[in-house]
Image 1 (cartoon, rainbow, N blue to C red):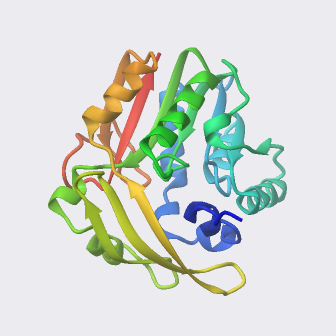
Image 2: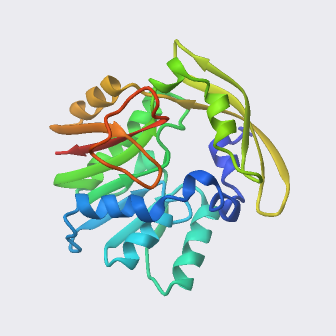
Image 3: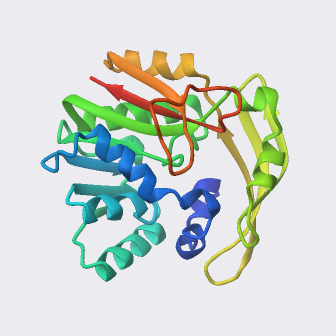
Length: 255
């Protein structure tokens, strides 16, 4: 029997602890930016890819937007449904593989934030399949907003030190980071506690992308207007020029 990919094992029972991670605390500010990008048009349908515990989908739904959330983890989706019900919201939270979405030109916008699937896959082809699948789900014109790991960062900084410096007590810990210049993948050991307090250790790797790669991939999918910026937690802005200090990049693509 095949061993589960690390990203499936990570999210098996990690909904409550995930919501306490430092990188999940900027949802409201990030939704402010999304609203601005949507011109506050609440008639637009939004697809949240890799929605996790539903933090962006729930916030946008509270503001009157029609959002559908998809994720591969049933545990994360269960947490999202629980939170939505507690808030009196009816949001479709559906289990799908982001590489194989069933939607065809159904949404006005798609969001994929905090590495919602992309770029966690085992190969570049699998990551690209997520971009292709998301693009098929979009109408034309349509807008795709996502964040991904900035390949410029590890050329100048230690990923392990960054993760250590931004980690709060009780959050997941990352060690033995090794950035491969040939593949632009960071290999690491991730240690965390699941929602039941069980300690777990996973061997993980994530793909970092440089801006020119992202632009080329998106242009090959028919996007004609592509903007790439620095991604500040809870404070996305088109005014933030991407640099080597940015751990993540914010991508806004229109077709």
